[in-house]
Length: 88
Image (cartoon, rainbow, N blue to C red; front, side, top):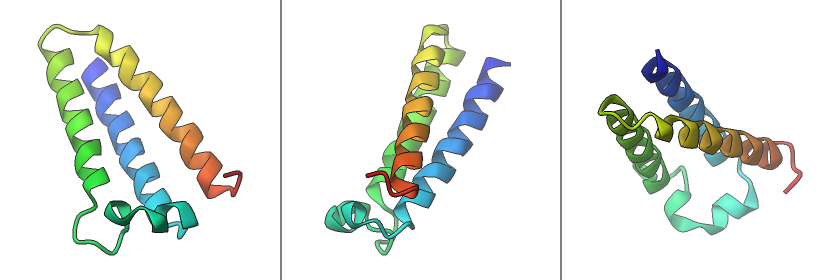
């Protein structure tokens, strides 16, 4: 059950990340390796690596990392909200 929740959080993280990349925010435009115009933004690869490693660790007996990923997802949601609503 916990793996399903983590996977769904991962999908949400990818969606938020993609929305921020495509927002046209000046902060994103200044960071060259995060520009959505590149073939695959490195930040999306890093997002995938974080999700994959969390899923593998939790599946192999490290359930405490699930809480860390939930906190990471909450921080991502707050950051995406701040960027997309123009608060930053």
